[in-house]
Length: 272
Image 1 (cartoon, rainbow, N blue to C red):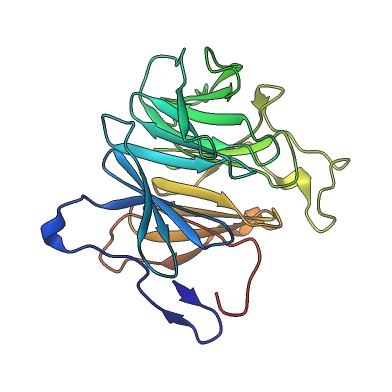
Image 2: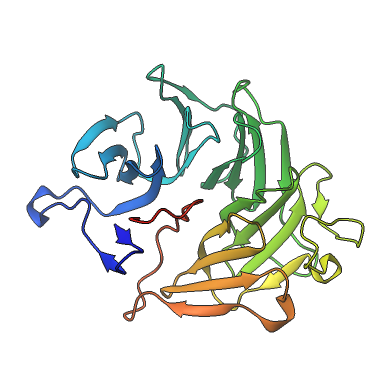
């Protein structure tokens, strides 16, 4: 846990090597940061961030979990392994298995920030969109294949906090795609679109070459920055107002270990 007041770090939760629970991954927070959610292998753990105690465990998967996502109202938790996606109704303590997945491995899942039942999945190189209230089949499937070459499987998905249709999709071979999930085509901005007056939307490209394999992707709360984690332990800051300058790079791991998760607090509190 990081404290902005004195720039200190404290361990919230840890295990001993003898417990052999596997590596921690897919970190989320809810209840204004009071509850942390993460996965170890095929199980999901809920931890009280103050006491460090496990308060709840979900064990519906048979294979390791590769992605977690909370709905905008914090009532639904999506968990994905490479072969299955489960949607957990947290208040009802129940879950649903999504059906009709296209061929390929599931590589990412992300709830839409504007619709609490809209779930976006990466399945191979396809973006798959579900209404979790109708789990029998996807609403649509959008291919990320490009005429100029294969960008690889999807590894991360992020939706704009302001636009209901703008999404960014990071692909394994180091490419970041911008697209309109309603029009099913690459997003082409024009000067009539003004979420932020200081951004020149005509300079937003359809695809960016990150020059590194990505592992995670998230928008800043105000929607003008993208943060990308990489396989070699770096955090890329991409300013949508200055794409021609390239990303700013911060080294997180001096030994080159990959970034497993990125989490941004929407509001800064004095003691957080």
